[in-house]
Image 1 (cartoon, helix red, strand yellow):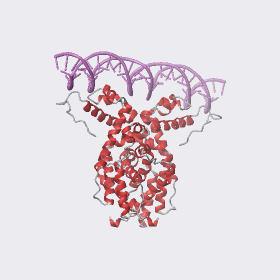
Image 2 (spheres, rainbow over the protein chains, first blue to last red):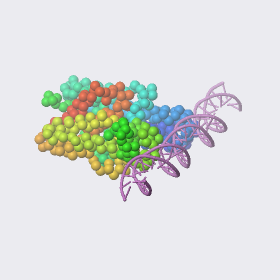
Image 3 (cartoon, each protein chain N blue to C red):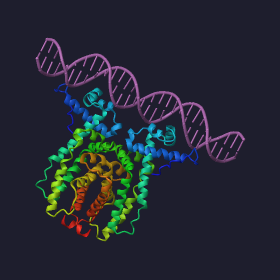
Image 4 (cartoon, rainbow over the protein chains, first blue to last red):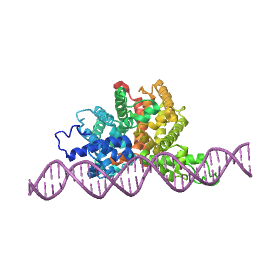
Length: 221
Length: 221
DNA sequence: TGACTAACGAACCAGTTCGTACATTAGTGA
DNA sequence: TCACTAATGTACGAACTGGTTCGTTAGTCA
């Protein structure tokens, strides 16, 4: 999320398409995440920008396309983090833990991304469907998982014959739920899943869960 | 979700407060789940009802309170299902599996509930906070989990010393994610997590995951 | 049977919201 | 330096939206 630097105008050009566009995306990300798609106001987004509503329509076309652009950028961040992950040197158990923790850390650090994805699901992923960029990029994490699973199975460490996509779903579900459902869970059960002092606890729990599943003794089942 | 029976008017009274109220709740549940809080239209809800918008304000006060009432009823359904669950006669492993499957089945059967909870989280659970009923009821599942965990630990079957609330979070996260993120996950990875022919697969996967976590061999860690 | 009230309906209103028409200016290349 | 275009700002409007006002009617109980 390349946030626009504050004093961009000092020294910079008054007319800077890239900067204006980026600033609109920054503000729109916050507003959509805060209020949902229908709840977000184009006027409000414009007001929190150093430019005007006119520019939103000039650069993005409309509210719908703006939301799609916001989503595209939000997804690119996690995709990049996954791409930068290097687990080649780790043994399968450590590698899976590392990957799970990457998702855990990313989701915790980007609650707006989580909210945007929740919102997009309410709208049945229609913006992803409309986006060429998001259409069929998948996730770099999947390839990583595939390789780890294979080596783990070869070495006999992993007994479960899970699919990479399903394992990704398992890891994501825990990380996503913790951030996405933080408020209802907290209100109903009086426990803050994202409390700072519980962070290590849940991070460990996630790894334990995934590893236990992958290495469980299947002979007694 | 006590859906109002279609030919309610035939024979019934023309003026039936309970029926009108229930019908408004039915329709409002669908509309809020479909479009989100801000996206749902009071006029549209009224139009899909056999009564008028006036009645929504007469019975509920406003859009906000209507949404709260919708949430209250949706939560009462799962609470009831959990209360009806009887696992006293099962061994701890089977009992946990049974409880996990109850959540799995409920979430799959009630996608509108899942959407409402997602929406409520976007609004930071403010309606739950405003509801006396939802304030501090918790979940009957928690007591069940507590008892199972204790007996499982006593018998030496369960090695993990998890808290009931955390285990509930683990189970819920998988079940919730599968339904809530169905669309984005499907659009990005080309896999429908709620496909009918994969139901048993995921149901088993959930149980395996939870049991593996609870019974994992901790001596090697 | 007649008064009383809970239940109900139609029309309306004030504020909002997405989107656009029109006008203007900063930078840039010839 | 001058024409040309990308970038930008202002003002406005048509449609919508939550909520209300005012009036009506079905059922019930004394």
